[in-house]
Length: 395
Ligand SMILES: Cc1cc2nc3c(=O)[nH]c(=O)nc-3n(C[C@H](O)[C@H](O)[C@H](O)COP(=O)(O)OP(=O)(O)OC[C@H]3O[C@@H](n4cnc5c(N)ncnc54)[C@H](O)[C@@H]3O)c2cc1C
Image (cartoon, rainbow, N blue to C red; front, top):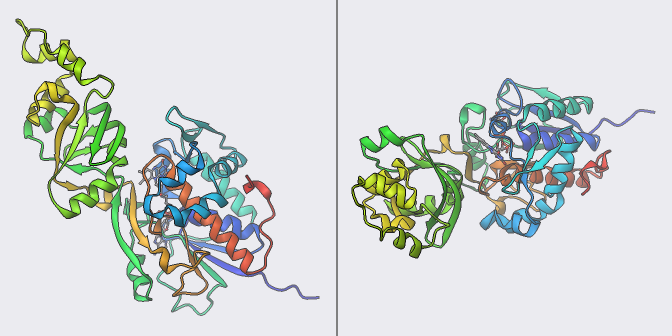
């Protein structure tokens, strides 16, 4: 009796989305080959690990899914298929036990990606996943031995030295796939600091501030940089700020330097006379302003009584190459309900190359994992293959 050859899958891109697709497909009995142009897998995943590897977030799923803004309706079924708790269980199964940080963000206890990636690659090897590294993918047209299915997991275009450079956009557009322009997400913004201010305060954090832009607001820290401002609270508003800057420049970001102190109290503290104190000393004693904050008020021509609404002029965005993530990508209209490209039957797309964006907080990796599990399961269903030998993804 001859055995039928297993169905073959090529996964292009060895980032978290590609590796997750490879795991599910190989667990379902497919012969999987992962191709990547880099000499090793998961380079951006490892870089994310430098910041502690914020895998996902612990908030309720209905709040979680809303973080994806316009893409929420598209991503909801994928996030329900493989929700944060399933990702946490999966990481645990690879020996990367997680904890919930004070902000609700979920991290592996090791606070890095390398042990998790090592255990994951070992598991993929046990599942007979083959790796073809240092291979550039340029489409299947010149390849006679095309696999049964292809999963594209080529990533966005931030930090291109880690492998993903968005070069795939031209290739897919040429085959009729609609791709929304790639734009920076979770990035810094330009400010025309004076030379004096830049030299003294670039690299200093603004701790526990509230930022406002139009109807959007964010609490947290920001970092003053040579070119302007960045950091968690800025990233949270980056999508709205980017879109506004695309319409008109400059725009005004409002900073509340003392979000927990009411305006009336600020005014009453400022009612005490300055006496013999220098201006900086007086403001330090009355309001606890650091030299950096006092200089920021001067730099932005803000009187101290208005420190809850410092108007910072943003003149531009930092480039995509320096962003944490990428907005834009393959339009959901170009995909069927299983994330298969309508223009390229048999070819699926997952991860950051799809047209969604989200703030930092674990939403980026979670969507990469969830889209990969969703597409891979749909592929197994379409090929009438079992949905994997391990129940570890079941929530
Ligand atoms: C500094 C930094 C910190 C981050 N921290 C976090 C975090 O804490 N939490 C979080 O949720 N997210 C974080 N992210 C974002 C997260 O890392 C990405 O969203 C995620 O890696 C995207 O996964 P992906 O598999 O879709 O793409 P990638 O991880 O970018 O993988 C794509 C792969 O495709 C390969 N490739 C591309 N084109 C080709 C080609 N033509 N031929 C062959 N191979 C190709 C690339 O070499 C790459 O290996 C961070 C990102 C950065 C830059």
